[in-house]
Length: 168
Image (cartoon, one colour):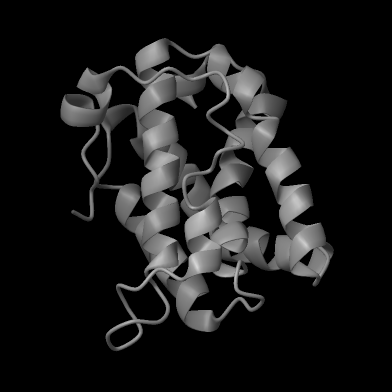
């Protein structure tokens, strides 16, 4: 991917795995991963492959090619117990911190904001009005992805100007 040209293939693969991992973390926070949450997460990833921050378009295009199969493979490989699964996912997502630190600050901040926005969309996919727009307490605890933002300082201008949620 050209936007992450300075990163190794292994690091790019870890960044690409983040989106399915975030899906499982958020969708499975209440103990079950339902088909609506999986389908919505795939739809959000696909929308972001053509409507996103310019440097993320190729990232989401690459993810979209294997999202469904990668998501199902990870679900099958991870433990069913929520606590065990969340600990493994949290550790995998925390491993992104040094990778994000290699990116320019603005890109790292935008990518982090994109991850949290993606998590919020997955969280809203189940429950609430006609199955949408409600975030449960379990999802709310992990939606901010606290394991990823250890190193990141996100200047206000990134929060305000530089990140636009493609689904907003």
